[in-house]
Length: 85
Image (cartoon, rainbow, N blue to C red; front, side):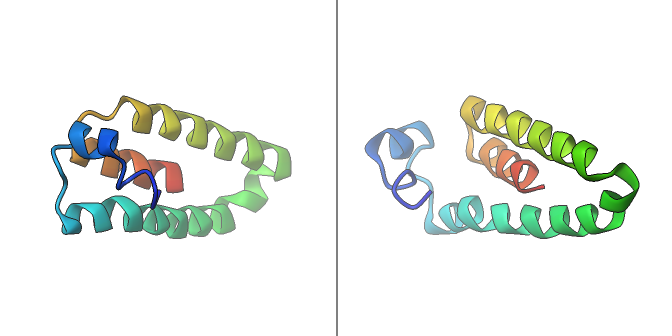
């Protein structure tokens, strides 16, 4: 994300996001990963290995689609948190 967030196309699309917004875009993905790892710990045994992998893969696919469709910073932040799950 480090090289993407400084690219001219990204800066133009998201109206030159502030350093706080950039930090949220990058950092909240890890917060989503933390929540996702806790969820995997709790529900992973119940779902089983294959179903857990399928659920995780679908979450990443949907999250990636949400990130690609983002037009404003808050949409991108929410999509990154979702992808982190």
